[in-house]
Image (cartoon, rainbow, N blue to C red; front, top):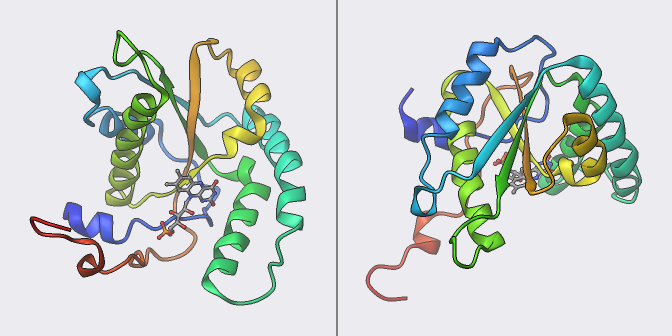
Length: 198
Ligand SMILES: Cc1cc2nc3c(=O)[nH]c(=O)nc-3n(C[C@H](O)[C@H](O)[C@H](O)COP(=O)(O)O)c2cc1C
């Protein structure tokens, strides 16, 4: 698949089949992630692939326990685009353990060496995560970026023995899509492109 076509249709896929994703394909996603650029080629990233049902259930329960009160406050009945997004996000959070694989993107705050910042840390992991989701789309796999790790950070740290100096930056859901890939809805380029001057 052409890379631009993959980007154009790389929607957040919150409805995923329970069919397992082969380990070799999950490893290929991490390979794609680790082909990304990073500041000074620092590559201060690590990826934890989670496809063990018992671990996903333990963490998934903690995610839902923390997030269900938040979703309970959002009215999910009207049919608008934002409502559909929240409904999908609530569905994903509730069914997170059933998603066949998660990839936890982690990073260390080590760049620049003389004065490390969180900004550089996040600018290391996010290009890698974007590579990962576009690669997944090209392989027919659906993904959703999530920040669900924030809701269950202590459980995740304990369950996965994450070192204290490692930040949990993004948790990507991966599986075969339950719904068709559709074009992403984004602002037209003419609204945001400036040539030579603002
Ligand atoms: C940093 C980041 C965090 C996100 N966190 C979540 C999340 O926690 N749950 C979720 O369902 N979607 C999450 N998303 C997905 C966005 O909501 C989604 O990409 C956006 O609404 C555009 O929709 P589309 O990608 O389907 O076009 C996140 C995306 C990014 C980049």
